[in-house]
Image (cartoon, rainbow, N blue to C red; front, side):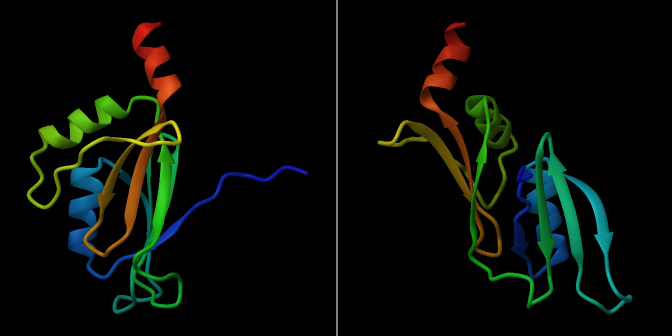
Length: 129
């Protein structure tokens, strides 16, 4: 048996704010958009590198305030990229955890938390190797 990767669905309430945060700030690309009709809520797939997320305005798809962890091998580079954008609503920082990861959490305009995480040993090995 083989289980594939998961695709989290995060609740959004405002398409413009979602695009500003996920596209402009975090650098995700829109893969697809779906509406049942012109007046229907948006369901959208986004991705960056190997990370795939679905965003939904449909109230039955998911609850606001979800939390996902996204592994990255170069957390410092991502941190520099995001802080260089000088995004008005968020200035992320990196925290070392007691369980051996370095984490950078950002919260979207809808209360969903995305924590970008790197194992300390992997991060250190890449910097010295």
